[in-house]
Each structure stands twice: as structure tokens, then as C-alpha cells.
Image (cartoon, rainbow over all chains, first blue to last red; front, top):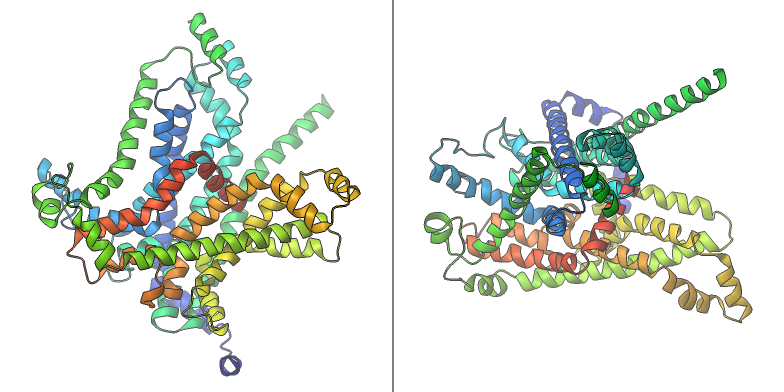
Length: 266
Length: 293
């Protein structure tokens, strides 16, 4: 331990690791991948989770319990099981290609071997697993909305779709904030799916910052460079969190202020 | 129309009134997605009972017949699955026990006792919740090496405790704050010492929180991959089940049935926990997210 510390003291490299990182070609790919990953999982999960949560909030619907379990089960599985499972589905001889073979369409392809498409497929696997999570969050949010609002809307002659658009979704702002933070930072932190499904390949095309760190530290023993990548990743996460908090808070406070000003003036 | 509205209001339902075609489209969509969500898992269960010939050629989609139980026997006897299972179990249970004990004592001290710096300690511990595991991979490995824990199960248990502790303390702190002081005062008047108050009065009152946390931490530790991969990834006798599943990527890619059987065994405890406590699991997982956000 003492040896490690003394060797640490001798090599203070200043910003060299960061300069190397920002100049690295993979850095751009990594950020692009994180962005694609984050956008896909956010849109996919929030879109489906909202639709399912609203549909299932109808207490007269049959099989609600079963549907909830069906959506939530992938969440409790280990990420490695899910990735291995989808790995075998997306494999060259896997289920998906078999399916296209039997239906006679020519979609058959190597899903994870294409350097441009691989990241979308990986993002889909993550989105598939964690959709149920956001679904559970939104269901909990809908439960906390008092039913009088819907009664009032119905008495005023409001259709169901309109009632949900004007009541449910605005009142879920806080829940959506959580969902956004979870899925956007989840995209920035993405690592496991790449590690298991493609190993960062083909040709480093599915690298993310975490993967750069993992590769540098545990494959090449370049700890300084790895930690620089990790620091940039944490900073990106914090920026996204601050940004989302800023967007959601700003609107409400602005409105409140305006209201109180109007009251005073009126 | 008016009748239907009144009915639905009586039933206290969120949706109701006249049901258009749109409603049925949504419901149908829900069921289709449920199939999409479950089919891969059912397929996994099916192919754990098939041999390669059936998986690839004769019967890729449907129900397995005849059942090839031997996949499970191979997985259990040939592929070290019992070892991985035991490792996962020991690590998960160890993590749960240590985290719960530490969090209970810590939160009691920070919410009920009066001492210098208790707010600072609480907030400092709370910072742990905002640090992603991915970012601390390297430091954790270095710390584990420096404490000479490499090659023991403690190398997984201690980092897992550290990761879960902040969240557990926060949940307990919230619960303790909601318990009226008078209960403890009454206990004190009746002559209970601090240990009696804690174990006989306070601990039973926060048991709902304990159950939620036990489930949450157990599932977290059982499924954890990122840290396990870098800490024990190269030590065969310490691998946990999530790592054991990956072991098939290399040497045994040809035995798909055995791989399926291992994956089913690895998912089994989590699914059992979920079916027994589905409500609590959903709550536990979603509080986790809500607080972390």
C-alpha cells in the first residue's frame, strides 16, 4: 500500500488524462451512444408505461393484476439473465431470425453485429427490461390522484381521453420528473448491456464512457485515464439532473408567481 | 350515457363512461404487450427443457416435448451452479443482515439521540445515494485490495452494504421521525433501559420498513453484476449467479439447454420472492427509484 501511494505522488499528470480523453475518437462515439441509448429508453418506457398505466387504472378492467405482473417481472430478473436471454434471441441462429425465416420475410440479419444498428438493439433490450419499473412508478402516481377530479371532468362533459390528457398527465409531473431522471442518467451510465451483448464491439462502436473506463482500468491497467472518463460521466449525470430539476421547478414557480401577482393586481 | 356515468362514479373508477373503440384498442394493446413482455421468459423456460436439435431445428417456438430434465441435472452437476447459488445466497443474506442492523442503529442514533454532528453525519451518509456504482468501480477494487479482502466473500458483501446503506438509513430515518417521542418517554418511566426501548418498542414499530428494505436489498444484491464482475470476475470459486450465467458465453456455447436451465435457476429465487410479496416488491423497488431521483 505504501508503495502504491508513493508511486501515486510521483506521477501527477495534471490534465493530461482529460486532454487525452477529449481528443479520443471513442469519446465522441461514447457520448453519441449514450445519447441514443438515453433517448430510446426514455421515449419507449415513458410512452408505453403511460398508456398501460392509464388503461390499467380502470378498476373494471379484467386481468389487471396479471398485466401488472407481466410488465413487472423483467424488472426483478438479473440484468445478466435478461441480456443472455436476448442475446440468444438476437443471435444469428436465434429466435428472431428463426421467426423471420418461417414467416418468409428477409429481415433476417446479424442484429448485434452491425456497427450502426447494434446500439439501437442494445437500448431496446434495456428498455424492454425496465419498462415495468416506470409503469409501476406511474401507477403509484395515478393512485394518488383523487377521483373527484375525474367526476368533475365527467360532469362537465369531458371525454376520457381528454380527462387523462388534462388531469392525469399534468398531475403526474413529479412522477415524470423521476422517470426522466432515471432513464436519462440510466442512458449516460449504460454499461452492462454492452458488456454482455456486444463486448463494446463491433470495433468499439458500442462504447460508452463507463465502458471506456472499464476498458482502460481493467483491461489496460490505465487507472488515471479510466477515472477521468468516470469523472466526466458523473458530471454529465449531475448536469442532466440539475437540468431536469431546473425545467420542472421553473415552470411551476413561474406560474405561482404570476397567479399571486394577478391576485394582487386584480 | 348519464346512467353509465353515474354507475362509474359509484364504482369509484378512474375511467368509465361510454367506452369507445379507442378503449378496446388500448386494452388489446395492453394484452399484446404483456405477451411480448412474457414470451421471452416463457421461451427461456421452454428451451431449458429442450436439446439443441429441438431449439434450432424442429421446435424453436413451442412447448417442449418430451421434457429434457437432464438439462437441469447437467447444470446442477457439471456447471458449478450449486457453488454460484451458494455464493449468491451467502453474499445476499450477509448484505441484508449487515445493512439492516447498521442502518437501524445509525438511524436511531441520528433521529432520536442528541449528540454533536448528528445532522452532518446523516447528510454525509446520504450523499452516498447520488453516486452511481459505475463511477466507483475502480476505487472499490482498490479499497478491497488494500483491506486484503480480495478472494473472500467480504469483497462483495462490504461494497454492497456500502451501496445500500445510504438508502436504508434514509427510509428508516423517515420512519423514526414519524414515531411519537411519548412512546419512549412512557417506556423510560416504566423503567426500560435504552436497549429495551430500542428492541421492544421501536424495532417492532418500524418492521414494515424492515420488510420493504429486506426485499429491496436482497433483490439488489442477488442481481448485482457490475461490481461482482470487477471484484470476483476472475475468481472461479467466488462467482455469483449473474456471473455464472455469463460463463456460458465462452466454453459451453454449444449447450443451449444447460444455459437455459442455469438461467431459470438463477431467476427462480427472485421470481419466488416476487410472487409471494408482489405488492411489497413493487413498492420497495419504486421507493428506491423515487428517493434516488
